[in-house]
Image 1 (spheres, helix red, strand yellow):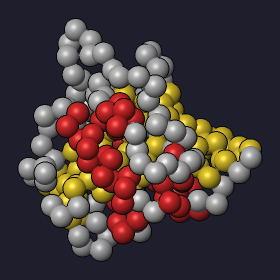
Image 2 (cartoon, helix red, strand yellow):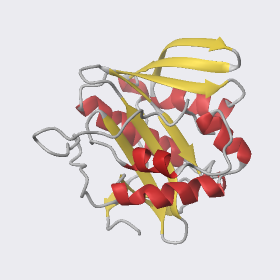
Image 3 (spheres, rainbow, N blue to C red):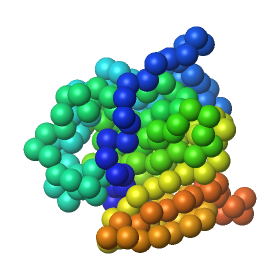
Image 4 (cartoon, rainbow, N blue to C red):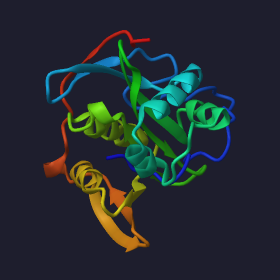
Length: 214
């Protein structure tokens, strides 16, 4: 189900003079998690990623099936390189943002992120969900949270790169956003996405503020 094109972030962020940013929903580096109930009734905690999540990202990659890892990174590595994990766990909560989903037993089980260039109103979306947690609405929840956050940062359009046979991810993106352009080349679908139409806005499951699981 995942989508992506690579590690998605070329370098570590340099926070501006105002420090770490904050999104329209009050999200920031120290924001507590909020609990989301999935379609099967299970609950997970969703919060912004933190630098100390780097080892958890490596552990998540180790638990992914080769198929899921390939759908996210378009390659299969024996292990997520520590430098990649460090880059992915460090965001500036503005032009580079990521949300993680956690459970008490498994730790990080899903990640949705976007990187964007300074001053740009477009960002690239990437998401991955651990195999055993797919099909429960978690990907929808993460991407919806990410898009809402990005819009509060002035980002109006999104890019996503999805393997052509990844029907579940293509359907998910079609639900949570408006497909403005779709092109397929060499087995990869390139999507340009806009905000969902008002009548088709996906409302994620009800959430409650909670302490993040560790």
